[in-house]
Length: 431
Ligand code: FES
Ligand SMILES: [Fe+2]
Figure 1 (cartoon, protein in one colour):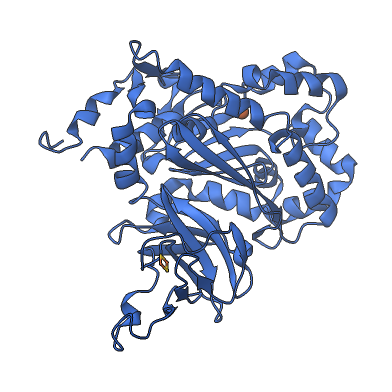
Figure 2 (spheres, protein in one colour; figure 1 turned 90 degrees about the horizontal axis):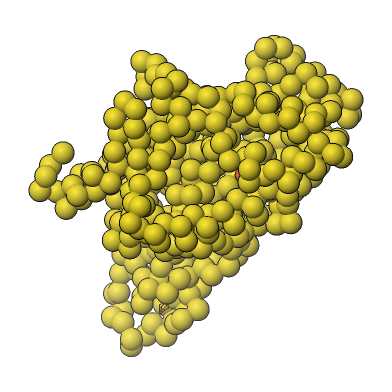
């Protein structure tokens, strides 16, 4: 560590020893740290922008954010995809204001400059006399984001021209991303329903940590599991608990594993049970189970049916049929956006079952996600008692193992993914 570095002081805010892992509450509350995150982290890591099925046709666009920066993902007339900064080259207004849509070109609403779907500046309103005749429009297109990667339909972008390639960045987390996509008979997924959004009064890292947190479910989602225990579970991918009582459910939730990877990625995984598998077959989805078993073999197919939440650092989670992103707005304000995806090649009935299961727990009126969001706001309030300072993330360190690729594995209720996240945070933030 360079002690003259402007960010060296951050080093003391994350403490790691073989038995102890703590981070300072300041990571979640300090405006200076938040500003640095926008610069050192959200401008240098690979940020998920959207899925190519969201911009399937020429003229389609979707707006997104890389940290605080507004960006646009568009498909031009030739079918090529572009990601550029959503900032007019005239006086800086956001050019594309809608969340998504289809347009022949983009027109800034302030003074009317017009840009092509590829971001090129095509027209300046009242050009004549206002600017020289030889004004070079080619220099004033919407600024492209330095790096864009399309991995099996997922579009990631990076503002840093020197950043490692996306697959290097993904590292040992790649097979887990592939597992989500390999569940589709056609090998790809499709976002078709738009997104639902929610905003909470808390730091973005609460959502990043929570998406692989196997420790909170029994308390935060107790009411959901009570419902399942009381009324059964015919209609959801939490099918592992088909006939279970509450104690069985809680016991099952202790099985599975959590993992932390380099660069901050992580997973939480909970096994599918024989009951759950039988439930799918008896529920009319035997075709799908047969396909998966035939394609991947029994052992792998059943492993692929586990519940598995994947976080790709810093701001994407893939779980339970959804792409979930979180957008930092302020140290204590975050917007979460969730898009359900279909498995291409699976029957409409199976995709519909998946959608209903997703809506039941994660939807705007779902039994699960709203409870998480409420907790994030309480976290932020609790951290105002800054005399306490430390947040403990040491759960399961004694039973965590590490392989020769730096992959750490622990029990399903352990904080291995959260530790991985904070190690990566430190790696980018402390220079
Ligand atoms: S700010 Fe866009 S045209 Fe003036
Ligand atoms: Fe939760």
